[in-house]
Amino acid sequence: MRYSFPVAQLGDHVKVSRKVLRLGTRGSALAMAQSRIVANYLTDRHPSLRVELVAIRTTGDVVADRPLHEFGGKGVFTKEIELALLRGEIDCAVHSLKDMPVTQPLVEQGELMIAAILEREDVRDVLVSRVARTINELPQNARVGSSSLRRRAQLLDRRPDLQVEPLRGNIDTRISKLKAGGFDAIVLAAAGISRLGVWDDALMTSIDLFQMLPAAGQGALAVQCRCADDVTRAFLAPLDHSPSRRAVEIERRLILELRGDCHSPLAVYVTDDRFEAAAKPFHLQAAVARRGGVPPLISVKMSGGAEIALDAARRLEDQGAIEMLHGPQC
Image (cartoon, rainbow, N blue to C red; front, side, top):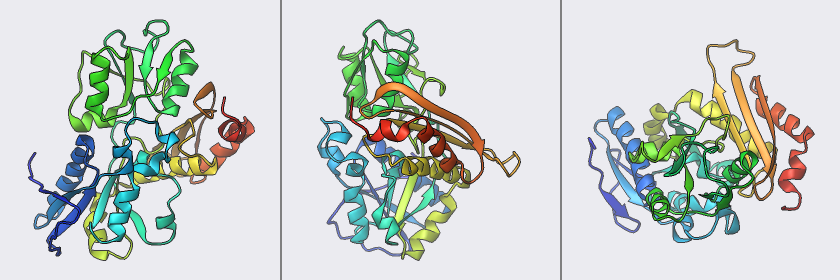
């Protein structure tokens, strides 16, 4: 890396001034890599700034052997970091946006804010397998590792014979389990693979969006800070990428309109085309399955303006989305 960033632990006494910014992050290899990306952007734009990474262990890191929907949902990756931010132990925090709940009480209360959303990376998922390059090529009754209900639903909608089994842990751990023969394939996010620099042509193939839509906010990094911290907000402002922010905010709005949560097998992808007529600059694709990740899917594909999330939600509701997402688990 071009820059060297010291890593502190909570409790270390660091004198903070306008020359030092404490950046909170989970301690996993991927989280640290993502935080270094943010730190590089900050020091590029503010050469006199020193960025210190502060590693914070979250509930999601401690409980690595159970699906998220069984013990607290996406907030298990953000809760401890947000508390450290509120206590002033860090100045800002980096999150994978798809790990952040769409309902954020601390934001609604005016205490915390997402000050920057970086330009989004590849939103696709990746099939990792020694025996197939596509979902259709997987052997009959193949074992596929993924704890994502969204991925499970889309895999089973295309291939009902697949045995989709829970799999959590960091990227290296999941790939190691595949190589050890525990699975015929696993599914990972392309952005995480890219940020870690672990792409392997022999094992990995990007999955087309028409086969598997991403989670809301997938591929986007969010940087959070205290609303009242004007200095940190000024540091972070140049990192915000408006087209990415507009797109992911619409995706998250759709989840909110459908009352989605960590139990929701709900996929959505929005693009922001600034070169089209102002009346319909957004393009949205979404798919919903039954609670528990049970197909078949219902879907919508449309273009629209600022209210496209609301329009898409109504179309999905007309197809039974609310009953599917909030009815009995099949």
